[in-house]
Length: 181
Image 1 (cartoon, rainbow, N blue to C red):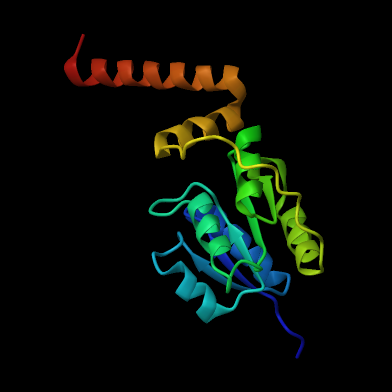
Image 2 (image 1 turned 120 degrees about the vertical axis):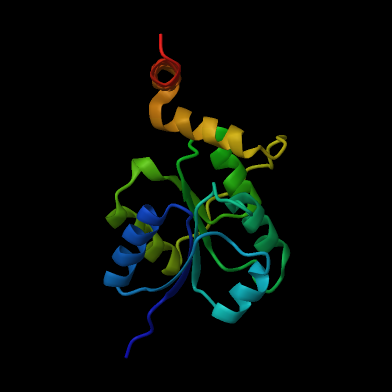
């Protein structure tokens, strides 16, 4: 029986996780799914011996940037390719992901699952790592700042402003419904 490449997959959105887990398994991969990287990430990776790590960036407890930093700092795990994918699509986010050591980083909304599978196959077949840009001079962002960046990636700045306006209107309608006129 041929070797099934093993992928550790970290994604906190269960709908997206199930979609990619199913797609990867149907395409011949052995997938081990986790909602987010655990505190004992190095031990987990050493025990599972993955061929590739497929990593979301915005996750509770430990985000993908912190997990990548941890894995790249350990000689036993630093050569395992990490393919990052998230909706953080600002240039600084992409540059940060690559500078921390991700093999490559894609913006989720710009790619279909089949393209993601082909990218993973390419990496496993020896596609070289994306060049590491210099580390950006940015402080780690809070969860709310990551959400704001995600909103901008999804909607663009004008769309983001419309989304904020719609939330504001929703709050007003809710307040009128609860407290009356």
